[in-house]
Length: 107
Image (cartoon, rainbow, N blue to C red; front, side, top):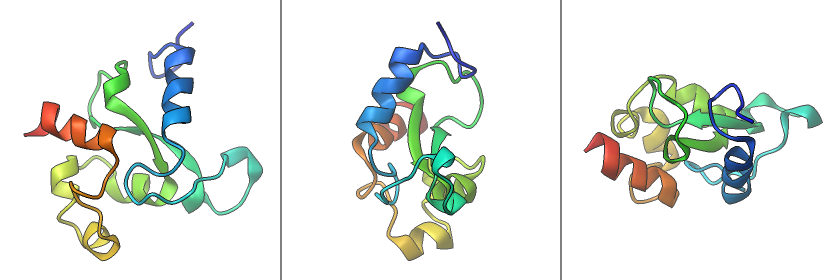
């Protein structure tokens, strides 16, 4: 069965298991259902800001802060923002799935 992102639930669950911390800033995230601050929530991140979003290589989990900051920017453009510079978020510091995505889709 597929979810609203077009991914099979098993694939989304594997992604969630893989991404225990934010793929960008490495913050430990919390489930939205637990309350707490939205900036710490685990959120689905569409690495590609335009559809299709039904490939596991284009989906990851990141914290609400990073997801909100990135918005619809290309990842390599987002790296140049003051948010990323201030948090030392760049190609070399992000998780492997993000580096793989940038290599395969943005460069």
